Length: 318
Image (cartoon, helix red, strand yellow):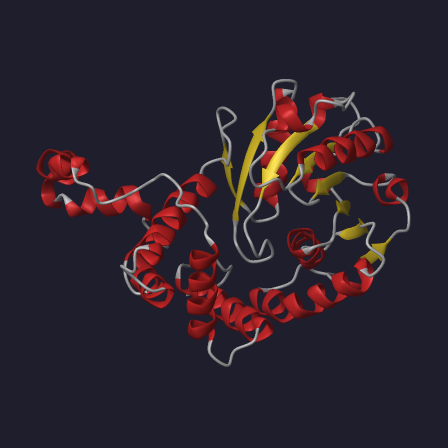
């Protein structure tokens, strides 16, 4: 589209919504040298946002900042229009409420220069349903990150029925340019790809806790010290491919295929009773021990940095 800034020449990004996900995007964009204009209607949004950015900055510094990157390049505006008026790209990260998303995206669309792509961090809604009230739906794209967005590389990108192909292509190119791992989906699917896979594992975990078959600590340990280590570099499909030995996936399916009929999983969600809720909460708190949320965030970030270095995803790492 005429007037759209090439991805490599983006200088200013607007982040609408400054919670955990929106704030994570802010930190990531700042670390990559952008000027960031942020807006959030909450009265304490700026203080919370700057605290989040400060907490993320040590990990981002260790990974390597872009030349000139600075937390001083963050501006928090009082008005939505002031945040998006000079943006080369907009990232919306409002709460997961469909009516709110529809209204906000329509407002962002009305206030943002017509050539600018608008991405949404939605974790489950499709752009077709979210863009229902937006006149410029052709430039609205899902750009679904993972928490924390400033460290996890993956972003799932998919347009809606009215999204233009060039908007999807531009979003993919821009996100790859700034170091993200991008999956461009061929079609809208509720929950996208990774969240659907996570949800299946989460539901089975709840079943096991509800039936007294496993504790939250055992479930976490089973992934941390088991398949999670392999999934970090091969994923479930290549992992099963290797399980087939020299015959690969074909042998694996031929040999283990009948086990797919075994009642190993229960994909229907269990009723979240007060008893189940309390059991999950208590078990998780027991696992956390004396560590606070802030302690756990620092621990997570430090270990993710280590994993990223080991996997060779940090420039210059050996």
